[in-house]
Amino acid sequence: MKVAILGDSHGQRCNIDIAMKQIEGKVDVVIHTGDIYADIEYMRNTYNIKIIGVKGNCDFHEDAADKLLEVIDGKRFFVTHGHKYNVKNNLNNIFYKGKEVNADIIVFGHSHIPYYSKEENVVLLNPGSISLPRGGSKKGYGVVTIQKDVVDVEQVIME
Image (cartoon, rainbow, N blue to C red; front, side):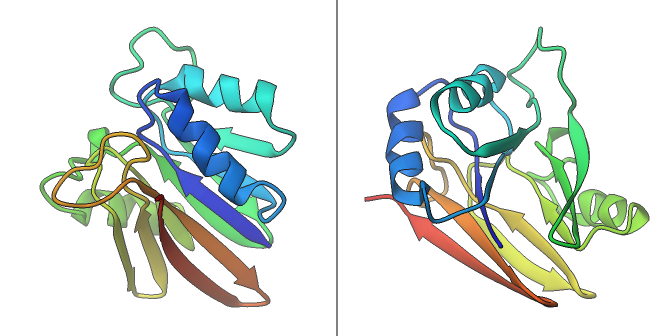
C-alpha cells in the first residue's frame, strides 16, 4: 500500500496537477494536510483516486474536519494541519495527541517545511508544501509505503 501525502497547496492547482501526474497510478490513497480545502475538492473531482483531507488555518468558512483518524492498511494515520498544535514551535503537542489516539503515523503541515522522524515507534511526517516551500526547502510531497508491519517514508522533491 502506498499513500501520497501533500499539502499547503494554497490554491495553486498547477502544482497539484504536477504532483498528481507524478503519483497517479503509483499510490492507492492521497492525504492532503490542508490549506486550501477547495483544493481537496478539486482533486476529488479531477482524479480517480481516494483523497483524504483536512482543513487548515486558511480555511475559514469550510465545514470540514480539522483532524482525522484514518486506518489505512492496518496503520492508524492521525491527520491534521498542525496549527492548533503549535507545530511551528515544537512537535510535543502533536506527538502526544498522536500517542493519545494510538496513531502509528502522524501527518501534518502548516510550517511548509518537510519533516520526518520516528519516535517511540510513531512516524511524524510533514511533507512540506507543494506550492510555497519555506526554510530553504523545495516544493515536494511524501510517500508512505506500508508492507506488512514495515513503514517506509520517502520525501519527494518536485522538479
